[in-house]
Length: 471
Image 1 (cartoon, rainbow, N blue to C red):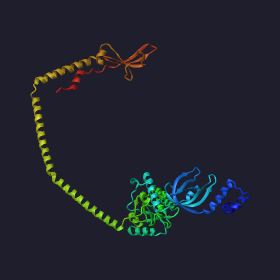
Image 2: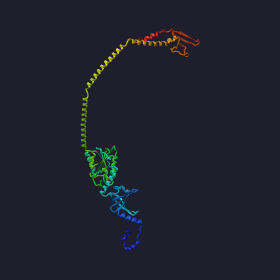
Image 3: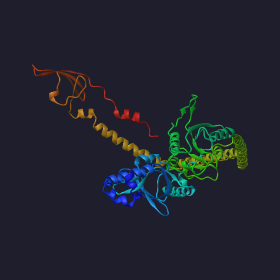
Image 4: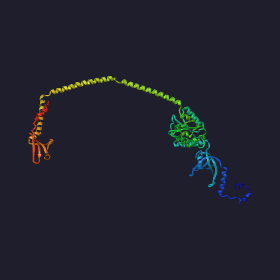
């Protein structure tokens, strides 16, 4: 390498002589030699500048440039270095990039290979904070209608913080002093590289606990937290930056359990404060917002009990007075019944009197009817009755037999209407008697045994006896 870079220091007279002896380099060899010199002198360097022209290639690598007032340098972030970065590179962000300088032989350019990024100063952090705030607000993550109500008296409280700091002790003592509750600690680093990932995982982990609860290390059944406190003590903006990261903000916005943020001091405001359901000025303040004072609750319950008793007493008194007023307005029941009894007696007397008068009127009308009218009705009905009797006698069996007819019957008394129905033994009735007959087929004759005719009854007299008098 010396013969390449010391040629300018050689005496003028020897330059011409050595030109013929100097080694010739190809372009590639020269590029490699330059690359070795650059990488050897700038293998670990920190460069401060503003990010511009960010481009993500299909391969996953990020190409960008760093600039200041006078110069620009190209830079590359290999895709395998991206997960290790503390911040996400964005255009306009002022950063301090840590990496090495190398050359790109294809275009004879030099570039910075970035291995780590950090915000350059508080001003840049505040600028980035404001840009992220606008982005999340545009997505609606800070809207009031997304916020959940903090339970008045939670049974279990989840806490996300460092297990070794003073924060968890302050929260635990404050809750025990006010109203002892179950506390579930999910430990997580609160600053440094990867802290935001652990905090987001802790919030999601508390949400993923079984709703019916779980068994703790002491064998006790513990209910899933009703509220989560994400807490950290005071510090610089850089120390608190993990609570401005996107992973934490989105974990809080997606939490099904209400979240109380308590990061830093009262004057510190992180993005987690905007997305949480309630912001506390300090971790101790978060404990006070999570649970009420037990003595105050007991006093409130006693006051409510007394007010309820007084209201119930007044309510019953009002109803009692109301009923008494209604009772005074009601008439005397005995007097009402007596009035109805009197009215009933009066109606009965008037009814009996009216009914008796009606019967008297009917009796008078009956006695006023002329006797001849009764006789006329009797004669007319009697004549009609006699006509019916005569018609009945004219169509009787006896009169029919007198006209020369014979009534033929079998031994059971059934009438024989056809010669086909004749029986060997039968009976014939004449007007003056009955004859038993037997059919003689060989002699073609009929034997008869005459019975005396039954005594003729006076049917007119019998009917008259049964009819009786019309009156």
